[in-house]
Figure 1 (cartoon, rainbow, N blue to C red):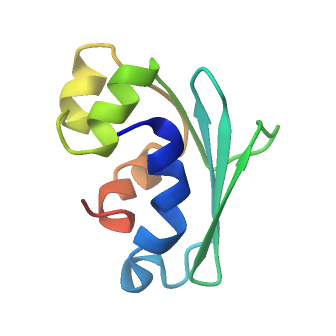
Figure 2: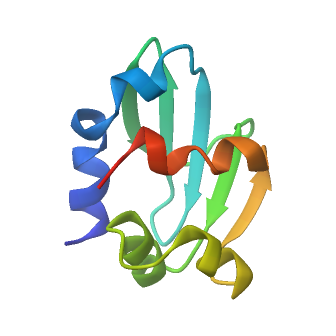
Length: 101
């Protein structure tokens, strides 16, 4: 599975119950940056980056694929330095509930 596959599937994988009331922008900084917006129970993904975000996730592509497919635990990635976060850390912890495997 590639990052293109994963980001392409995100809108259909959004957990609507977990996304209720969420208004957030997630900036994924990888080889091809992507911006994921969650608003009104819907998810959109576009290539590129934004200046204002709720949380920014910076990772190498292979580590990001592993984390988004459940092969790499987010907390393990954080503790081992494979992920750098900027912004709302509490919101970052909710990402797994928003996009279950």
